[in-house]
Image 1 (tube, protein in one colour):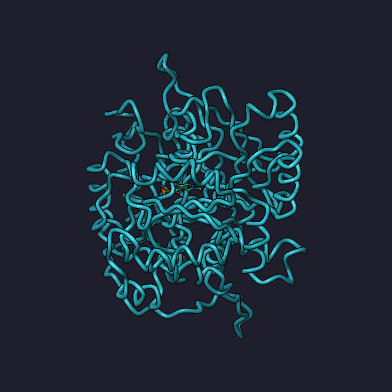
Image 2 (tube, rainbow, N blue to C red):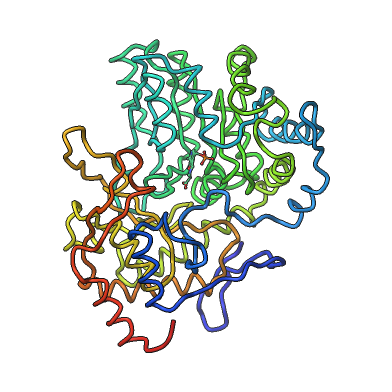
Length: 482
Ligand code: F0G
C-alpha cells in the first residue's frame, strides 16, 4: 500500500484493494450509546455488536479475506483423515518456513498449550522479549515462569526507536549464567510484541539471540502471530532487509528458529493455528497432544474451509501491498494524533494505535481504572469499541490489593483491510474532541468483580455523573450530528 502525494500537497495512504462484500454498520445516537455503555457495565467486551460502529477491540479473527481466500474455501476437502486441504497447508508452511514437521491447532493458545506441556517443567524458566497473556498462562500452568527481557527502549512510551520489540541479549546471557542452560525450557521471541504497542523485532537482534542459543544448546521458539506487520517493518526499517523480498526475509527469520507457531486469526487472515518444527524428535514428542486436545492430525480443530483460506492467506502475506495496509493505516492514525498533541505510543507499530492514558487522563487515578474509563468514554462519544490494556486487565493480589499496571493503554486495533480512511479520520476526530474535553472524564469502580479474568466479564460504574456531563458537552458542540 503506497502513501501517495495529492496535488494539494497532502500525503495519503492509498488502498490497493477494493471492497466487494460489505457489512452494514450502525451508529446509534449518543444517548443510546450512553445507555449501551451502562448496560455493558462500562466494559467494552460486554457491548453488543449492533451498538458498535467501529469495532477496534482486536485484530484477531476479524481481518478481511481476499476474493482468492473465499474462493479457495469452496474447494475444501472435507474429511476427517488424509484431507488434501491439509496437505496444501502443510506444503505452504514447509515452503515458507523451510521446516518439515507441522502440527495443526484450533488457534494460537492451543499451540502454546502443547509447547508448554512438552517443554516446560516445574521450576523451569522461559526468557522472552515480552509475554502475551495466554502464553504466560500456559507456562505458569505447567510450573514454569516467564522472564521478560525486553530491551530498555522497549518500555519507553514515546520514542523514535525502530525496533522496540528487541530482546536484551546481555540479559539472556545473564539468565543462562545464573540459572544454568538446563533450567531454561526455551527462549521465546514474539514478533510484534502485542502488549507493548505492536513493536517489531529486528533480524539482527534475532541473530544475536540465536548465537546465544547455539552457545548453550537452547531451543528458540518464534511466536509469528504478528509476523505480517513485523515483516513489513523489517523491509522498511532494517538496512540488511531493504533489498530482500518479503519471502526472503521470512526465510531468514525462520532459519534462525527451531520452532515457529502462530495464531491464524492474525497471520494468514483466517482462523486456526499451527506449530512448525525443525527437529523430528521434537515433533514426535508433541504430536500425541494434537488428537488429544485439537482434532486429528490433518485438521487440528480447524474447519477445512478455514485451512484453505489460511493457505492462500499465508501466500498473500508475501505481498508487500497486503502486509503494509495495517501498519500504514496505523502510522497515519498515530501520526495524526501525535500531531494534535494527543499522547500515543510512538513510533507507530503493528496491530493498532495505542493511547497512553497516564498522560491522556493524568487526573484520573490508576486505581479508578483510567484506561477502562477512557475506553468507555470513547465508546460513548464515537461508537468506537477499543480494549483496555492496563490495571483493569491485571489480577488482584491475594491480599486484595490492586497491582497497578506499568502502562495504562487503550488499544484501538486496525483489523487488516477492514476500515476505510474516512472511518479512520472519524476516529481521529472524535479522539481529538475527547482529548480537548478530557477534564470531563472521571474514573470507574467495580460493581461486579469476577475473581479471574475480571476484564472480560467485570461490570463497572462511573464514580460520579461525569458521563452525563460528557454527553451534554458533546450535544452542545455537535448538535444533532452523530
Ligand atoms: N500470541 C500472540 C502474540 C497473540 O497476539 C495472541 C492473541 C495469541 C498468541 C493467542 O492466539 O487468540 O489464536 O489463541 N491475541 C489476541 C488479541 C487475542 O486480541 O490480541 P489465539
